[in-house]
Length: 187
Image (cartoon, rainbow, N blue to C red; front, top):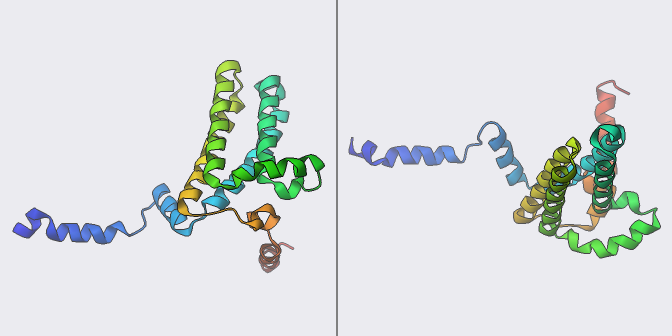
């Protein structure tokens, strides 16, 4: 009886369950933390931000506002230069800018920069409006947090990150995708 009141046996049982994965969002976050994939999540988040931001700003130009949309497109182009270096190798201007952006290969610096872009996007919303500024301000901040978590997790920038393989789209993955689609009868 005294052992139960002091919590000795109960604490041992709780300690055993603390290593078990939690269900839901926290469980997924724990799994991602253990696997160390925040760099991949942040890279894909940046790519999706660029494509969605440019597409939605052009599509909803009249609704969002011309000035707000142009500012968001400029921010998306800046993120595109950081996230899509393999797409920019054909443009001279991107090859010229990239060496000056080497500081952003340190993920906590890139994360803080993205969080700053998100805050600037919120400030644009506060000054001029434009509902897309809220949407992309939030996604820029979340992307920045992924980069900061990647840094604290010990993930670093590699030379492969400057290629398509850095996003997990290398020839090995394409071969696996082709084999899977063939097996399912899609192709």
